[in-house]
Amino acid sequence: MNSMKQIRVFAPASVANMGCGFDIMGMTLDAVGDVLKVEAAEGAGDMCGIRIENRSAADLPEDPERNVITPALRAFMFAMEGEKLISGGTPHADNVGPSLLGGVVLLRGYEPLDVVRLPVPERFCCTVAHPDIMVSTREARDVLPREIPLRSAVSQWGNVGGLVAGLMSGDVELVGRSMRDVVAEPHRKRFIPGFDELRDAVIAAGALAMNISGAGPSVFALSSDMETAARAGEIMKSHFAARGVASDIYVSKVSNRGARVLND
Ligand code: HSE
Image 1 (cartoon, rainbow, N blue to C red):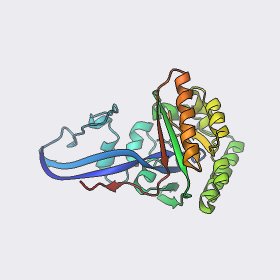
Image 2: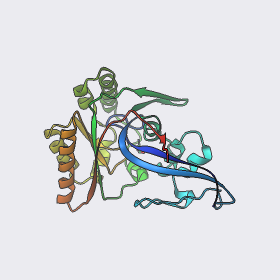
Image 3: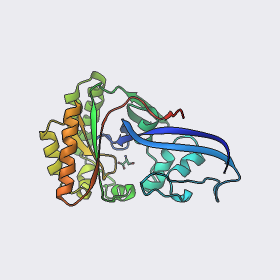
Image 4: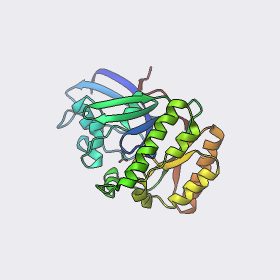
């Protein structure tokens, strides 16, 4: 490849939904994420002018037509177009918003896009368990009902309000009790072995909340100190191991920093 220009970028991982904020909220992790090298070159690439090389251990598609990066590169506006490819047609920015901007991000509206950054209480720590099971975003969206009862809607928007108020005021207890999802999680938890049992154990160990991370199958717990976050990670690891499922555990502070250029 004839190199013209290249850039290395760190894109932090994010946790979408934060429980009650289906498709409208997400938060950024510190020191967990992907390093991307983007290079512009002459005469390279295949049918769409984009060539993708995966040098990570993860099984990611190098075929540009199957990789979430391609629509984002083509659109070159907001990376949520990539999500449209894997979710079966609905663009949503609750992962890419926090990854790009850092902190907790609220998508107040999509048409037009209205992105609101919310403060992250200093002591927030996040534990993420990624069990070795396959659940596609499309599959996890297909199980959702197209309509929700008014009672569920009332409960959900009460929780979203409580979550925003808790973040604004630094009230971590309010944040914790607001992170309850009555819309998506009841339908998605079947994909995660022993989900309710795991949540009870993690909450009993002192975590503020535990939910499915985005569409799953990862789960995450929010804690107000690193010690509790680490303990939640141990509980998650042994929970999945007891069910014959390997898992990767990440313990991280919630970060106010989004995507950034790395110096070589
Ligand atoms: N908000 C999305 C969902 C996140 O829950 O389906 C997955 O990208």
